[in-house]
Image (cartoon, rainbow, N blue to C red; front, side):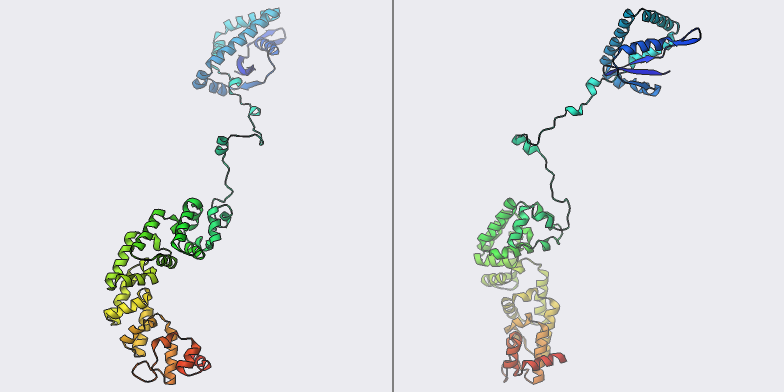
Length: 436
């Protein structure tokens, strides 16, 4: 069976092809003729041919329940149109009577059609139609309120990912200010997660207060860039914690200038808690047997002692005592004179001591008297000693003539060493170096 859905004012009405009626040699479809006459009176809209499968879809309960009222109204309009047409045209009334008689003769067919007409839910274009042309398009020159302006989302021009901070410098106030301070962003972007951390920082809330604290502390402006390059994580520290650590150092009688110098030399100093700083100061004072004043002097000269691990320090102290054979007071003098001995490489320290003590035959007392030699370059000590030994002037005993102290041996420039200590020319020393 073929069904026709005809749009009546934006809705559809279902009609069925009527049985045919033969007259003479011609075959006339009564239902079709009536349908054609009614169709001429109705608005000229689109006729859609729907198969049985589509009809079953239209007969679904959710759609039928939603548009039941619209369906009843449209059926009333369709029947009213048919009745008006039958009253105006006598021939149409006769045809309609014949159509009704034929319907009575075949009730099963027309009952199915009536059921389909009652259950098919037309699409109400007045309710569901969306007119895109009626959408409001605001003018770009139209004034808007502040609330509407805040709700406007402008996509960022910054790339979501980048292997360098260069694309963000012009757009980020924090990065541009750090560049002006002398921070080397190319070094920081090579460190993991540092670049993303800097991009998220707000200059006025996160960076400016820390810079003011460092400046008030006495850190020179020319050193701020170098400090932040080495320790950008100070910008993520709480301002209260930084102030508490500075106050603690001042309470231990470190002067303001000393604290500023310590922070400049050891940028990570203020990243450590008050408890850790207190434990480190107590360790050096107790382990080395130093007074509070000497402990402050050692730490001020080498603030890295408060930042690094204690294991290398403990190991070097044991080496000086057990392997080198220095006494406790000699170790104190070495540490207070050259604090770097505590964090020096163990292999290098052992190599220098072995050459001075066993090869040059210098006693412990003289090494402790000139502990700077333990921080010198091994190659320089070896070359100069061998040159003096070649000239017959390698004399390091104070009680013997032509005595040469360890500091003159190591720390004088080559020209002065050759003219005053070796009593030779610089060219002779350079030619000797080529033979080594």
